[in-house]
Amino acid sequence: MTPAIYEEITTALKRENLPLTKVCELAKNSGSNWSEAQVHLFFACMDGVEIDTASKDLPLVKLGQRTEKEELVEAIIQVVNSNTGKPISAAEIRRKLPGKFITTEAQIKALAKETSVLEVFGPGLIRYKG
Image 1 (tube, one colour):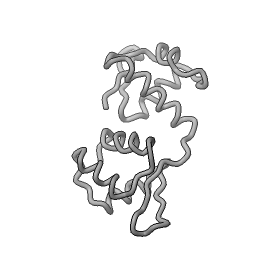
Image 2 (cartoon, rainbow, N blue to C red):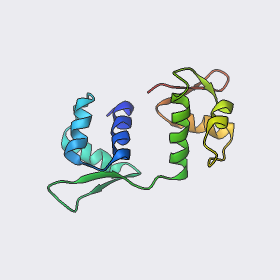
Image 3 (cartoon, helix red, strand yellow):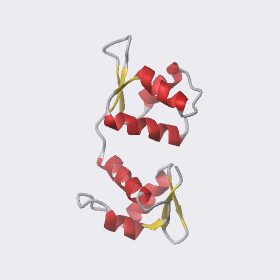
């Protein structure tokens, strides 16, 4: 599963909980050749994703509670994406973040380095590489 496929699936899961079969269908439509068992195992091991197996016939995949760090990373990605593909400085990202986030440029750079869909380069510029 590529980061882009994972991102597409989690974006769909943000809108609504999905049956495992639907998650597998999304993965296959995005180019994955993983079996349903592999997708199930992958999401069962991911932090922040829950698989509700109350109905054995139709396991439901849903996002769990996100941490403050995960919310900040998502907000950073949104700011970078809103820059129409152009690199953006950590200082500019910090200015554009919603007011509920209190962070530093150093933390933004560190989180961007940890995030597979972002790239830090040059003098602290960040771009989306999704």
